[in-house]
Length: 387
Image (cartoon, rainbow, N blue to C red; front, side):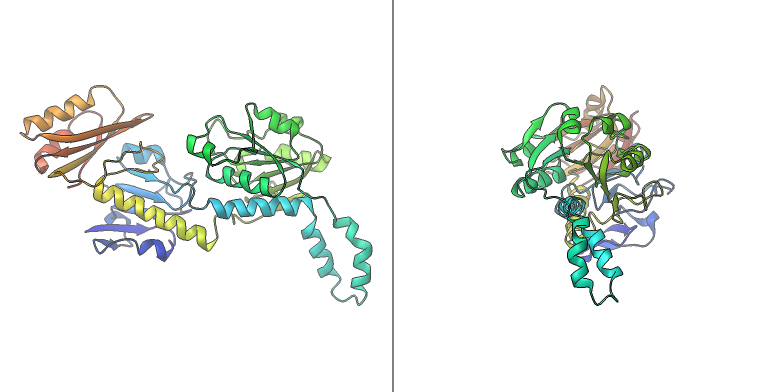
């Protein structure tokens, strides 16, 4: 029997994908796996029993990835599961920024007691008219699950779309419309585009990438959209650019004291992935990832360990080893297993940065003595009997 715990409310449609072999617990120390959305885990004590954390969403800033890796805990996310919800909000943001719809709505509300509101509206509407997005240049920084959906949708709205992503995957490239211009230098996005939307993960290399210098390269009256992470943008510089008119609108999903209430901002309260459909999709994917890892030892969509898939185990035994990515590990594993008198029927080893993962199928069931011998190898972080 496996036990799991939810640190945030997780959509029931996802939790129903757990079989009768799983039991929900409210006690973290009892859990083999944890499902989480926004709960901050950095100050939590990680129990010895915990082997998997699944983030029902894409961002994992609330999870201590390195600490989890050192404890042999695989952290999953659910890339693409919420992409459509975010895409639709980005498109809404562009439309709201191009026409002063919010200002117009607020003006009408302010005239609720005016019997001449209809007649007066005809005189006032020019203040809120704005422009169309068809024919405008849209620059997309990051062509992952969300960026590619935004790109394709924008082409259908008549926009001239430019995409920048030096690390674009083959699958993402195949999914992009052939009308999208692939840009090699992000500065070309900054200097040429009327609308710029950013869809990259928050890393040391991307933090503050929409900088004062980047903004200085942009067109007068540019619209910047940020539905990825607020710290990707130097918001102090951004506020200055809004006040000078360099930036027409800043549309973001991240409310904070720097930008809240600043003229020219359109700020939503982190709504991007908050649709019912997105929450359902994330929950379903997270549960599937946990089950495949606990039951088969397979890893898909991990952010701190390599992906690894050996399918369902048809051998007599299977062991999973989380370890550091250092030399001579495989030979030590096979030596221990050989000394136990057990043959290996299949094996795979994958690495990701400082960490690695090895799955080994055995012709005889694994035993605790073998596990203890493997755990004693320097660099091994966790050994788990899968079957």
